[in-house]
Length: 179
Image (cartoon, rainbow, N blue to C red; front, side):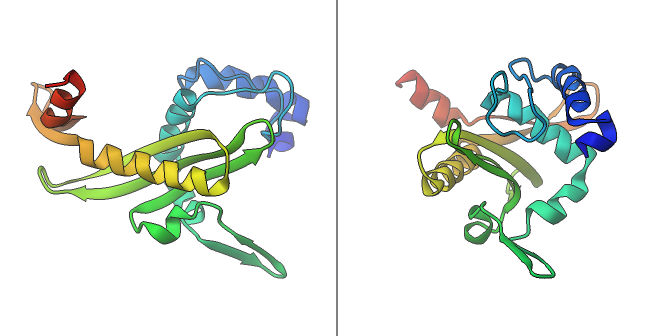
């Protein structure tokens, strides 16, 4: 894809670096399209969140691939390393990765129906640098569960029409303040 869009791997790199800030990725720089550890190639968990959100918004068909636990084509077979897919039915993907330098990483996402108001909320969890593949999955699962349990949806109508705002629930705010 990099060669097709950028003419070459080297030609694709500046396109990636021009697009990253447009997506809100202020602490990301690409020096290779592959994601393999190379000098000058870096990102943050904060930057991977808007990338995941944009991927979800612009290419919802991606979930048909990232939600599959197993892929086979001819003799080629691959098991998805996002083991949350088999543990939590609300998880529908996104991406795992591992390099020696970065450790075990994951951008996981899940959709769960909320009781009040009746909406379906999508949550993203980004975990970088886990020491093992198992820690990556445990950590991402904990982040997803925390977001769904400690944040609540509140219906509002602020003159632009009815919509929902998600905020930390009141008891959780009190716990943070030590009261």
